[in-house]
Length: 112
Ligand code: TYC
Image (cartoon, rainbow, N blue to C red; front, side):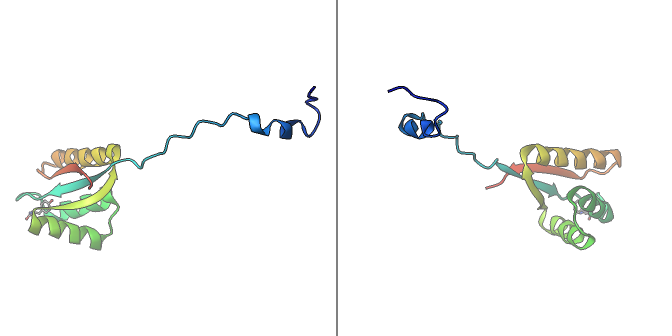
């Protein structure tokens, strides 16, 4: 049978022959990382509060509560991000603290 490609039925005639596109790979959400702030005996409390406001977009109330949690419990989570962002924030905080001569440190760990 000759097929006229201008025939509007042309495509319908060939429906059964269409190759199916390969299934798209399923996307997984990226692993997430916690940024953890560590306590020390020397960094002033108001400096920690300022850091939490600036680098983790916390309100004064949230940053005060988080600073106190670190002070009393030794550490607290400041935020959960993709790996690059978590690493960058932990690095920026530690670097800023060092520039200001405070020993404040952040570390990251993979979220459960
Ligand atoms: N423990 C510090 C002090 O008594 C305050 C502090 C809080 C330091 C949180 C670090 O991540 C920290 N001055």
